[in-house]
Image (cartoon, rainbow, N blue to C red; front, side, top):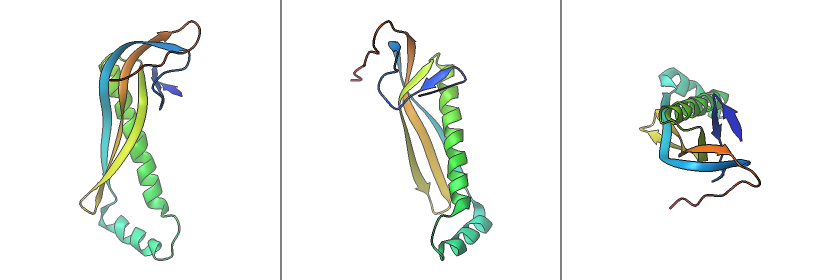
Length: 122
């Protein structure tokens, strides 16, 4: 569970120690990245030897962080203080770009007395 910028983000469908008082809906944060021709050529040459291609790993890690930041911003704009069921997806656009999407359900939570409540999303 992470709580940055006042928005709790969890992969579960509940927030431990909190009670969901309002389900706002599905939200997402998207970024599209490209290494460029020079970067792709260098990565292609490195892939011949096998192993990790660090340039792509860094690019995808940065893209994931950007998508998370945009997801948090979207939650705040809707008045949510938490995102449950956080997930990531990625897809290629052409052969030179990668789309990274962070998505989940924006909710409002309050402190709960006792155990955390699970919510069923229908």
